Length: 123
Length: 184
Image (cartoon, rainbow over the protein chains, first blue to last red):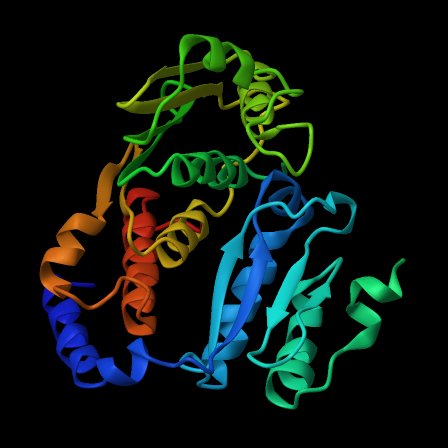
């Protein structure tokens, strides 16, 4: 059973590496579109897939997954934007949980954009 | 929407955008009464009476990136198509409450779906907002109140991976209890 005492232990552990967590200006950012259009198209499993894949690889300090609203291209949802400091923002469209592992591995880890999933491949 | 939990996620985003500090999500299910009700209550900026009227119109949105706003209309439709009801009340400066009730056994009932995932994502993506999630069934009830977690955590953020994991497991455990140990 999950208890608040357990949460206390988490706090103490987290406090020990809080400086590590707070400041990582080089962290990459993954924005998942979570407005009506995105949610209806399946953005939630995509967001979950990103957090799971990133946790599996222990990259939580290097990659932040956040949600964003509708960026106006509803027909291409689920839309995911990847921002790596110093590099151009990449917009992935029609994302699926299956595609997530490749984006994490190829783009976020190895810095190779997965061109066939980007908006450029669809327009 | 394939799951009501996605409608909840969507409507709760409106609370986030309304700069709420506290969002209360309440889900009550009863097989005995053939009823499911959902309410989302926030203390955000609220709306005028005129805006409340507009918000159920699919061709109204406060956004500027597009001309349609389907979140609330879809939520309303999901309830009314089961013979249930929908209401929204709001006061400028005080907040908004959106509530929907469903006839569970109706052929057009949308499944609740993975409501825990919705709650978990809302907390993880909005660590500065407090959420109170209450889920009740015929077997019992539980509440997750991030204000209580915050008291324990101090300045450790709610989106810390270990905390997120704790929240996830807590929700899973409690849900299993109120569903009577059956598969969810």
